[in-house]
Image (cartoon, rainbow, N blue to C red; front, side, top):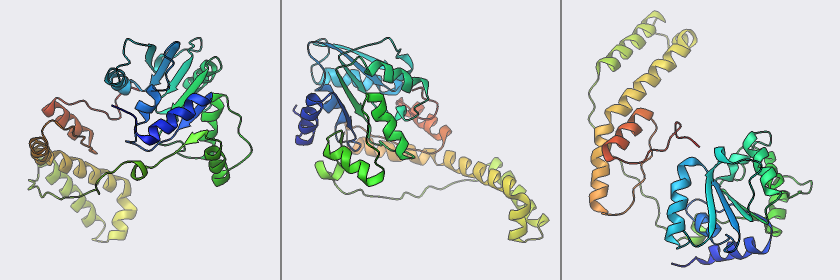
Length: 282
């Protein structure tokens, strides 16, 4: 195994300066890049969401670094201000976007004693420019009074932020979409909700504007319930499709995205697969 060119470039830059934000796009290998920035003779700390701790341990083993260097892997909820390390890596660093949050204040204190800080995130700015400024403040970097494109260009020019897009560095095929029709049967719950909506329509004298004006909240709520039931009723078709993919590409990983919590839980249980959603602890 060896790093790709863009990873090697990022590693060299991170090793030549105290603090760097690696804002590479998803799938471009930020984890492997960061692992090669660890100090082989010093103490290292990796901070990541709880759901990603196992993956970091796996990557350490994959690159033959487990047991050969001093490294501790902790979740954001486990870090404390008195902790210190020669090198600190913050994965999903956008979790430090709020300058007043406890985790951000804790991270800022920790970084003051570190010799090298590497922050990893594919989304350095989620809502406003203040968030990215908070990340640099946490790293101990004072930014000039610039905004928008001027700030972006400054960060790139100074190599304080490393940015590449997936299509620029990976030879990936075009995304393909396919649609699978699934026969659905109305459940008692769906039939009841449909009747209630029909009654609202009749009460509004079959006028859509009056229906929306008089029953907006109730109508949206019932439509969302129908949507959820339809989603659950498609679970069997989703299981068939997943089995087809697993049979077609034996041994290859498969990621399934879904909208409804109940559907995700049913799929995870069916395939004994890890589940990451709103209830997953960070």
